[in-house]
Picture 1 (cartoon, rainbow, N blue to C red):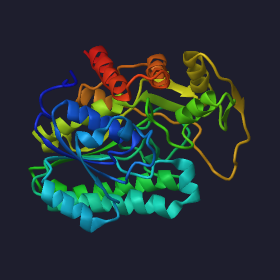
Picture 2: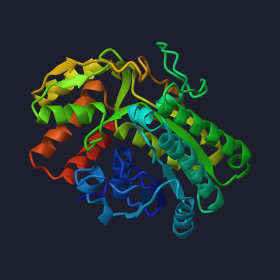
Picture 3: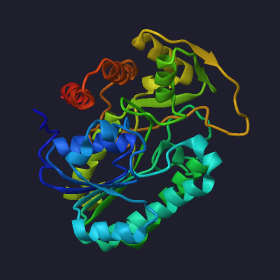
Picture 4: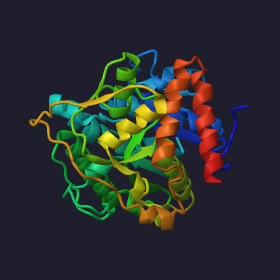
Amino acid sequence: MEKMVMNQFYQGKRVLLTGDTGFKGSWLALWLHAMGANVLGYALAPTSKDDHFNLLNLANDIEHIDGNLLDSQLLNDVFERFQPEIVFHLAAQALVRLSYDDPKTTFDTNVSGSVNVLEAVRKTKSVKSLIYVTSDKCYKNNEWIWGYRENDALGGHDPYSASKAAAELVFSSYIDSFFSKNESIGVASVRAGNVIGGGDWALDRIIPDCIRSISRNIPIEIRSPNSTRPWQHVLEPLSGYLFLGQRLYESPKEFSGAWNFGPEFGSVKTVLQLVESCIQVYGSGEVIVGKTDGSKHEAGLLHLNCEKAKHGLAWHPVWGFEQTVFQTISWYKDFKNGVNPREISMNHIHNYLANKR
């Protein structure tokens, strides 16, 4: 029995989700479908048969439109036809190092594409709630030891981080210019930590790189072993997005604005600590430190202050670092052992909700 609820709110709601073929988007699409939402996904087509979207057979459960955020005409047509009540905007070029290789596509997608989504929302009277996903990397990183708060300065060294900071400035302008004058819509930007979990196969991301290396019986090569990140399971920020989506719908002006969703400070670990934990859970593998590409700057120290979400939404992270790594690596182990990927992912959602209760 797949049907499950975090609550009854999403039952029958028309939800438009950009980026449904991506890692986070496919998990959110599955969760929304399981709660009984009527989901339409808009994104580029999945690139591999092993993409989480394909493994879950989500195309059989939701309506999916192959579309680029830069195709404003198609995007507007989809909004006009579907008349969504709730919009989750996740679609993005999400890789830091790729942004160095192709900065124009990164800025086009993450800034101009987001403008197209905001325009479609502005023109669609049915929309009551918008969750606009950026990144923890939207903050100007001072490499300090305390977490960034929602009112800290925005900025970005690399093109990806800068594109997300720019997307936040665009969002702020739309609030001030348009959405604040509309009493019937709630809009929020959300910034999550470094998200990991099963079903991620992206190139140049730490967990997929670990799994590929272990499966090929070659050492896991890492560039920046001492860089720290706020590691969190994919279900953690998604639960926050879902809670916030409901609150925006019910009390638009009270909950509009920016929100952080990150792990507790104890989950801020180095890249080396994460990889060593992955090896321990998987039961095989080894790690080596490779040469750092000095031409491509990456943040060293980064974490989020989530007191606003804790007090304002009563949202708290559920899984600590060890459980996050265990759940993530166990997904790949089960998949390798032939367990149905949809069954694995649904079990993880059930486990998460059981722990949350």
